[in-house]
Amino acid sequence: MSSLNFYHDEPLFGLDIGHSNLKVMQLQTEPGKKPRVLGYGAGGYPAESMANGVIVDYKAISHALYKIFTEGITGNISAKRVACTIPTSRTFSRPMRLPLMDDDQLKEAVRLEAEQYIPLHPDNLYIDYEITHQDSEGVDVLMMAAPRNIVDSYMRLLEAIGLEPVALEPTMNATSRLFGLADPSHGAPTLLMDFGSLSVDMAAIDKTMFVNSTIAGGSDDIDNLISKGLKVSKQEAYDLKNKYGISTSKYQDAITESVRPLLENLIRECKKTVRYYNERAAANRKIVQIIIIGGGANMPGLSQYLSRELDMPARMLDPWRQLDFGELRPPSEVERSMYVTVAGEAILQPEVIFA
Image (tube, rainbow, N blue to C red; front, side):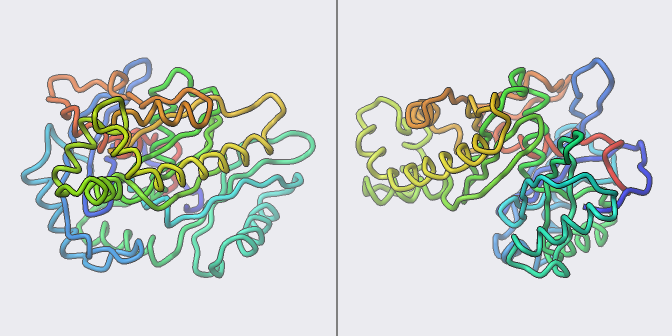
């Protein structure tokens, strides 16, 4: 979300600041080879260190990052340049079709669109755009914007601890980049769903991100609903979710009934996103599959439920065969889902970084 000047072909690492947790990863990319993981790690911080997406306790998050780098890295992270995510739920995006115009006119047109669409004054936003298609009749643009107070708080944190921030982007952008690397079907229009702890981010992906949205309710909410519905402890609910979920078992009916409100809301929002894309895409372009990532994606039976309710195939994204861990110990099966977004951020190429 900054203007083009020049780029440095120098190493960087990815940083994903999630809800009360941090993930870091550095990759090395060479033409014709799988990206090689040089180092990765994760750690936590108090949730109250963030308020509405703004970092408010710099000391707590700085300490958590320091602890990761001194005690929690598998391999080695040597780069000082960092590409960092910000929550998709705190950002705004909107596809638009505009007439052909020069760069200055296009920038002003995007700003005017942001003023109409986003419930914040443009002066309080960082606004950027990506040209996704251009022909003799006009240009398709994906407008993206983020509140200045959120972006500025991230910049202050990173600069205060001696890092050089070179990119800030929504988590869904990073996730879609990894999807493009890891999935051979990435040319097909796809509903990409990131099932987090507190919310679900989803986006229509057709070579680039077409539109995205966030809905409240994630894997932590599923734990709470199971705990309440089955009258068990939070730990027992967590175990039931991960072992049985909504797949066929003696608990299926009870668990499904407990989480039904969250799942039905999820399906409604999925249908809205699919309909929005299908109505605006070219005649022969329709969303044909659902790809799920994130910690909540591990719940047994979720893929089958989405396939049935949305009448298209749904499956988890498995990007790890496309990354080379070399002699490093890969993350465990349980841990892998938490590294998807930061891996997508870590493969950001220097030539697309504006410094």
